[in-house]
Image (cartoon, rainbow, N blue to C red; front, top):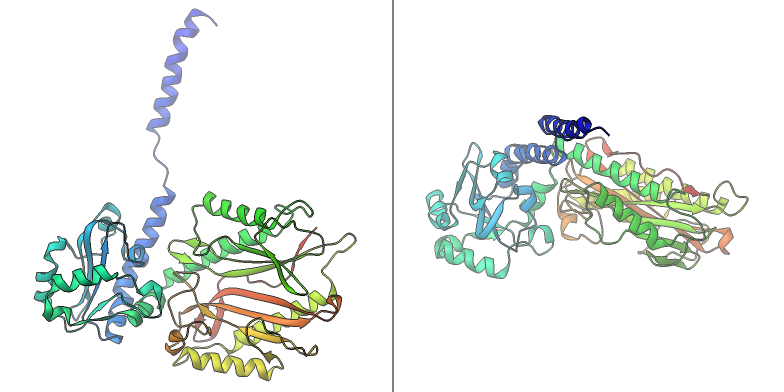
Length: 440
C-alpha cells in the first residue's frame, strides 16, 4: 500500500460510516407492535368497555398496582411506569367512559393517547368523591385468576384511601373483566389469528426431520428447540416447557424428557405462543416411520379419522347461547347422537367397538386458558356466562379408539385448535390439524 493510499483509506472508511449513520432509521418491529396494541386498546376502550360496564352495573372500575406487583391487566391497560402506588380509573360518564391514570407515567402509556388525564396517586380520594360512583369494581375474583390482581395489602390501602363511604361500594369485577377481555374487536381477532399461525408453524416444524433424527433426538431436544424459536422471534408462552410426549398402549410414556425418539413412536405436542398479549393453545400429532413405511399404520389412521369426525360434530354444534353450559349440552347431545361414547377424562371404556370421547372447549385469548365464557368442565363458573359471537375458544377433544396393532388397547388422539364463535358457529382462525405428521 502506498503512503497516499494509507492516508486516504481512513477518510474513506469514515465517509462510509458517516453515510451509513446518515441513512434513515428503518421502521422498528417494537414500534409496529406497540402501534398495533394501541389500536386494539383504543377500540376496546371506545367500543367494548362502556357496554361491559353497563352490563355489569359498574359506575367505576379501579385497577390498583404498585412497583413489583403489577395487575394481570397491566399490558391491556397500556403498561406504564408504576412507582409506589398507582391507580387506573375508569368512570362511566354517560356518553363515554372516562380514563384516568393516577400515579402512572411513561412514554408507551402517554403516547398511545387513550387516557383522558394523568394525575397523582394522592389525588384518588378527591377524584372518586367528585364522581360519586355507586358501584366500584375492583379486581377480586373467586374463579378467574386474571381478574384477581388486587392483593390483600392493596385492598386495605384502597379502602383506607377512599374512606368508609366509598370503600363500602367496592364490588368484585370478575364477571366484568371476563366480558371486557373476551368481547373481541376485529383487530384482536386478526392479531390472535396471527399468533395461531405462528404457533402452528413452529409446532409443525418441530415435528419434522428439520428437528428430529430418530434414534438421536430426545423429547426435550424438541421442546428446547421450540423455546428457542420463541426467543428468536420475540414471542412468549403462557405455558411452561412445551409438552412433547410419546403415547403408547398404556398411555403417555414420557413427556419433554431425555427419552430418545424412536421409529414407531406416536408423538404429541401441546403448547401455545404468546404474541401481543394474545396466547394460543394447540396440539399436533406425528408418527415416526419405521423402515419401509410410507404412512402411519392403519390403526392409527383410523383412530385419527374418528377424532376428526368428533371435531366435525363439535364445529357444527357450538353456537352462541345464553350460557356456555347450554352450548356444551347441545354439543354433547350431537356427539352422542353421532354414535360416540362420553367418558370421564382419561377413562376409556372397555368396549372395543366404540370411540370414547372427552371434550374441553375452553376460553382462550389473553392466556392459554382464557378469561371468557368456557365450555370446559374445568371452568364451572364460566359455564354460566353467555357465549357470545366474537368469543375466542380452543376446540379441544380427546378420542379413544381401539388399535389392533396395540392388542386392542385404545389410542388417545388429542385434537386442539383455536377458533372464533360467530353467528354462523365456529370458524377456524388458521389451518387446523388435518393429518398425522410424518417423520422419516
